[in-house]
Image (cartoon, rainbow, N blue to C red; front, side, top):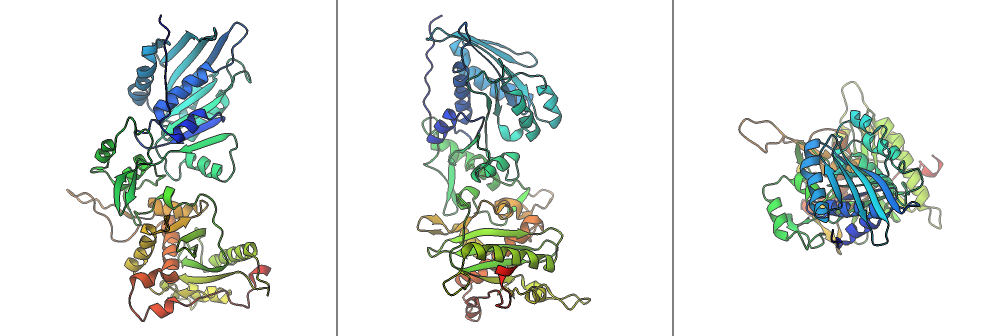
Length: 495
């Protein structure tokens, strides 16, 4: 047999970093057509040929290739695999149950590669039993977001078992996928990685293939694999697709899948999420409040460059105004301690509280209102200047679509997970089933865990100056300049 020569060139910086990673766990998230599967195939081959040779010059290893369903495994994963490796005559494939490939070939250094690759379809938690007893070197999870966390957990215990524990040059799990949902187990890992956890894990995120410019989706020049996938491919993909489909599959946005329409569709989690945790600067913090059985608050501050920072949130399930008071007092105390004091002993942060005007209404059986409860507990909160949903939505939408010196008008701390999920689609208008018609939605947003904190953010923004931009009523503007702070009789430093 004539010696086979295999050449490969990375089609992007993120792809190269993913291919070169040697962490125990590695995942790459990318849009359609971004070469993440092809890169994973060559990554697997690199791992195979780089395994340690034994005394007789054999580089032995055993691998599992995981896909969610058997049709996807055979029609996509195995087809891609054979398309690259069959012409090289590196081994033989048998389509049994499960399909297997046995690689057997010599390297220029006179060593011999002997590798077993087992293709397994796993899409249910009960499929964990298929992995029991497998002795593997490593595993590749193709389209990892379709595979349950229980499968991944079991795989971590089945690798580094062949040929013997601790012998191989590399052992572990790697995987590729399109963007996952914001509440997916892979996002938990990605979030932990951003916060300095998971030291032996790598998570790589490719640039989106498309991005929004002036409200329209356009093909991005920052995309990877441009040599093989031209812009027309993505222009055709955009045509007729739903907004959430484009965000996940083309823009590579971590999304929140809903059967509805996002209230704030211009939010982009990759664009509007800050690279690290945001810390307010000395000055005024705007705190928007929403009441009800799921009281919530959003903490935001406008920076000198005009960008809004959303740096903290409060979300209480099955609570009331008293519970909210305790949470607000604790948050204010925490942030004022972090910010410190001026030379004359005054806190460097002041807090302006604005909430849902309906919070000033009382029930016939109770003379208290949420605002009265807040004030009685030292939080000088006032009704927002408007409860008009059009005004509130527009205040946040303007910030989302604005840029300030090349930066997005809104930046959200990664830890504000409920706000991020809400803006990504959890805060939405529910679809209405109408016979013979599609695209019909309710007129008011669906009330859920996400809606309250997102509406709280809206209240904070309209009286932080954004309402003055969209409301020219001269009677409204003066009220917007008020700064409502914590009453002096309550010292947050002693809470």
